[in-house]
Length: 470
Image (cartoon, rainbow, N blue to C red; front, top):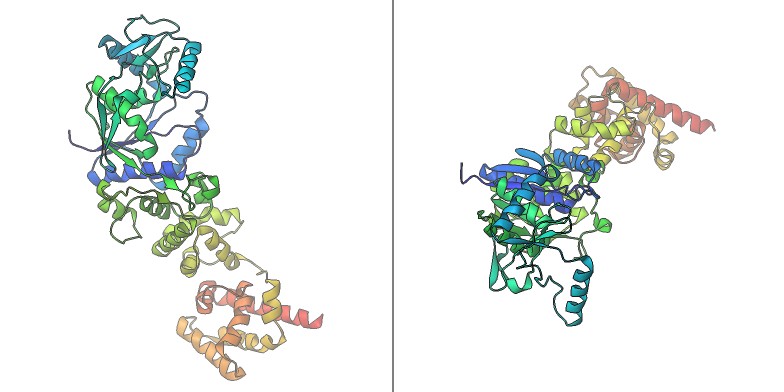
């Protein structure tokens, strides 16, 4: 239908997909989904020297991990050169562009002269009215208006006015026949039916040139929305030292795609005071009207806190799929051990990342359990032997291995020894996990089961005896 919103994400495959690019893709994706529109993926690979297939693959991988699916594409600019040449020739025929054969030396001299007199280094229009024919050394220049203004209607920033006298007759096609950025963007957006352009505000200065090209091509203007950049905590442009790495690096660091989506959208958009959003929430509530005008500041601590909330909100089965690669990397075999979903349920409230969760799950699948030196010296000592031995007897004699009988078993050990729960629980914790910090004792015992729990308690008793005999 004619009024359907059509957005696009047009990355250049000259590197990985970073946070700023991912946020741009997200805004276009979620706006298309919110409005029932279409989201188009276009690979801007006309920079042959810098574009690589590895970068294309990395972009696809990042978008797929984030779950940003596209309805059309991917289109490749490198496969559309004939389209650009046709439109460039059409502009020449209409008198809106012309061929220019000024040499690089002459252009450099022109630039230096303008700089020396305090002017703006721009083309002086030497070939503007010559009516040159195409040749091996000619470029195609756009015939920009010399007077008046060009207004960029921006739904985020408001109207932005540019003086046409500040623009010059910019090149739209090089002498080798390849098109330039501003020209291909307009031709692509026009011919692909893109009617909503959401992008970083580093593109604002390109927009007046693009608007003039739309007008020259008799093409309808899209809606423009320029989103403020993502900054580092020190309010400078986000760089590697701030965390401007590949989006997929955050996957490696144990962040959930849902948390990354949530965090990225909040870097420049708001919906009241709400911080936590599911993907469904975003599709339902996103609007360009609530995109902010100030730069978003990247904060790894906020991302981590939000990730912890998404871990808590996920189901154990959902997390099991995401956790598997982290367990494999640690050579943790979950086949011969407790149910992974049950293990995850004990770790969800304690894990900020999947890395922490995988590390936390290790003791469940370790046989024997390695004891931390400090923990074993403090808690696995002769005084702990009797409570551990009594607990083994209680567990082996239990008819029903459930929560209430477990609590009663511990109470009987407390009565028999005169010890408080803490004095018993910590040696048991170290015996079962090898550490002093872990999920709750009853949770662990429930997940490990009677046989494994008893085996680990007996192993701790053997350890205490060996240490006493040394």
